[in-house]
Amino acid sequence: MDQNEAAPQGAAPDAVVPALGFPPDFPVEIEPEPDGGLDRRALLQSSVILLGGEVSARALQPVPGLPLRVAETLEQNRVTPAVLETIQLAVGYYSQTFDQHDFDELHGALSEHLETVLTLLRGPATFRQRGELCLYGARLSGMLALLTHMQGKLAECLSHYRNAYLLSEEIGDRAFMSWVMAERAAVAWSVGNARAVRQLTESFVDGTRGANRANMVSNLAQAAARTNDRALSLRMIAEAEAAAETIPSGQNSDLPGTPIWGFSPSSTITNTAIGWLNLEEPQRALEAAQRSVVLLGEHAIHRHVAHSKIIMATAHVNLGEPGEGCRLASEVILSAPQDVYIVSRQSTDLLRALHSYRGTPEVRQLRDVIAHYENRFERAGRRAPDGAAG
Image (cartoon, rainbow, N blue to C red; front, top):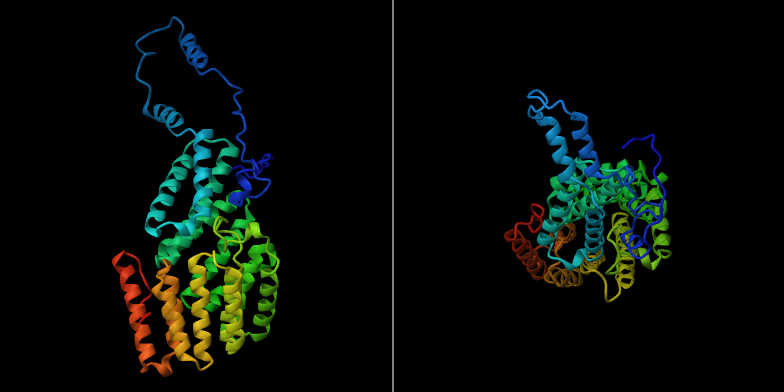
């Protein structure tokens, strides 16, 4: 995209675009082609006239392969309003129903639409069309990254996040770039790299506003606690807790029907609970995790509830209540949340807290529940972290 060319201005259809979480000034309406409706038949006829009467053997030699391939590309890979609308609707649908699908089937559907975007990006497009394709490609890549993180396919996950970031950067969509960085930090946390979480969030948080800043701040709160920076962790916890109180309902991604790149108050508060655990204040951690469950309500997304309750279980263990921790964790894991990798990582931390109780019947039973859960998903081709139930 020509960086010297100013992005065209245009209003998006209110009925669709805000629900997808697009920047409000992003031009979604298709601009007229710059040829002003040039008649293609007239263009072909003019080519015949140019040949005129000099029809000779030399003039009728076969056209070289390159111009033919260019012509074929122009015909076959044209970006049409109908194609763009189809992709737009698909992005909106899957972003708002993400957790209602089987994750393997969702992976296939998202990949198919991303392939379409990739094909169109290789072909000719107006400035506006290319911008829309980058926008949709970034969203599809972001959803695939989130999905593969939950499935434990970390190499694929990181590749999708990189692509989502670059596509967003292409159109200057800083808000989505911030979402990508916050989620990328969550990947680093899930593999136990708190220093990488700090590096990712601290390099980006000062230029981030609104919901994305709250997401980053909550990641930084837990990472600062893990790296023994108590003062920073406490400041970030306070900011994250305040942000969770002010999020508009239309941006609350805890609620079904809201795009997944909105703001999750429950996840933010769960992260502060993890921060409290690492600050060795389990009562504060338990209170935060309980608050997260209350924020979720009865119609909340299943995996968000699971995350909060496993942190509650860990807090109970650290308060000297291993039986309650095992009971609560078993209840969550038996409900079989689809994001096996994240739940297994959290279960690993829980079992670490239960180490001194490892010989009790409750802990042995919990290990069996976790192992059965992980094996079920292993058979389906998903991956739990090594040693989670060991």
